[in-house]
Every structure is written in structure tokens, then in C-alpha cells.
Length: 318
Image (cartoon, rainbow, N blue to C red; front, side, top):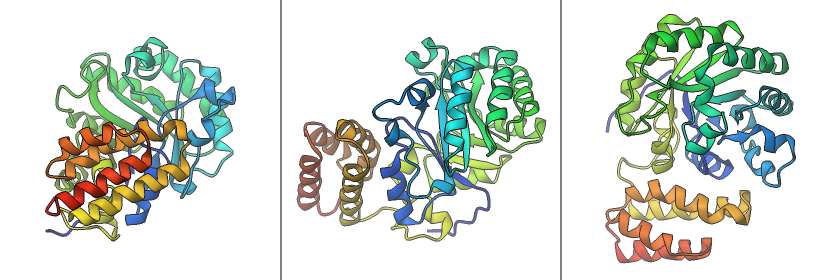
């Protein structure tokens, strides 16, 4: 085990069905991260008073370190939703210009904003008028691999008042099929006068160190933070377990997550959020695929808790 020293901020990525209060509470238990981005909040649904928006916008347990991420296709809705969230205690408002999920793209949201520099710039100008806190954008390279276009696009965002850009350096079509081109994070950092964070394929503490040593101002961590919710603690002096936690520690962590999920998420979300969490967390176990299959058969959180405890009894070595 080696010493971890990083002065740059470490941020939890916005992940659908994952970046909610229960996960933040779990990360905070071990020591906490520097910034937490929420999962996507639909601007139109928020303004319409959707029945579950209170859960999407729950900024606990540390609202001063929570960045609310908005997604939408209509500028006036995004501006109004940003103004609404900016009245809360927060660490910033983030606009999603990077999601490449088919439903989001068909709606004209997410990475579709990168199709037009002028349209995106006008959106930022509109939102900037409404937001007093830090305004950020999370995006991809764009529709195609064109670094010159990416730089022009981001310079326009900067000129309209964006304070931070987070780049997931893949194109809209690549998803996870090709390695992220982290050199583009460096290109942006050199071209812009605002901070640039990098995100993509952070799979280990060593990878965090390597990326933080490179040309970026912050590192955003996604799936690794779900698999190892103690990962931030390794760099911030918290109570992190060993590199390969004992099964008893894994059981305790899994059961704590289920308790937090029951406390902070509505029953309608329990199974989907739990399955998403265990899709990554179970990789800590020797027979993780087997355990995921067993958990997937359960119909409530209590059943999942029983399966986890039974697995650890049956496999005390992992």
C-alpha cells in the first residue's frame, strides 16, 4: 500500500440511479469527497412538480458540496429550473451536454447541445443570468472526433460565463467502446482560462493519481466510487478499509447502503437503485457474478440483505 497525496478536487460523477443521497451518505461515512454531482434532474419535470423530484433534489447530507445537474432541451425550462435550484444551498449548477442515451438524444437534450455552438452559447447566457453560484457544464468531445470544434465550443461557453467544464473525452457514439482520450482534457485546459476536470475510465486509486498528476484541474470519479465508496477516503484521510476489504467489511457496507436506500429513496426506486449499485459493488467479491444473479432475483431490500449475509457466511474468504 502506498501513500496517496492529491491536492486537486475529487468529484463524484452524475450517474443515473446512483448519484443520490444514499450513495453520498455512504461515501461520507468513510470520509467524503470534495464535490458530489447529482444524477440528471429533468428541468421540465422539476418545474411541473413531478412526484419524485424531491428525491432527485435532496442535497443531503452535505448540500454545500452538492452540484445539481440539469438535463433538458428547452432553454427557458433549463434557465427556470436552474434558478429554482440556485435558491437552495449548493456548490453549483451543472448543465448536461454529454449524455448520449438514445432517449435523451431523441429529445434534443444531452450531447445534442454540442451540435450548435451558437445555440449552446445562447443557453449559457440565459442560464447565467439566473444563477449566482458556480455554473458548470459536463460534455463529451462531440458528435465526431474534432478537437478544434471542441475548443471553439468550450471557448464560447467560457465567454458566456461558464465557470467549470468537465470533459468525458469520448464522442457521442463511442460510449464505453473506445478508451477515453484524456489528452483532450489537456488540450482544453491549455485553451481555456477556466478550470477543466476530466472524467472517464477511472478504475483504481493508482489511476486517480495518474490522472491528477496530468493536465487537469479536478478528477471526476464514477463507477469506481460505487464499487469502492471508500475511495475518496484514501486521499482525504478518512476511514478507508484495506485495498481488498474483508468480506465482513463488504457485508457491513452493503447492508448500510440498503438501510440508507430505504431511508432516503421512495419504495418505487428501491429495486432499481439497489440493482444498479450491486452491479458494481459485487465486483469486490470472489464470486461477484453469482452474487449479482442471486440479488437480481429478490423482490425487496430485506431479501437482498438476507442474500448478502448468507453469501458471506457461505464464503468467509470472499
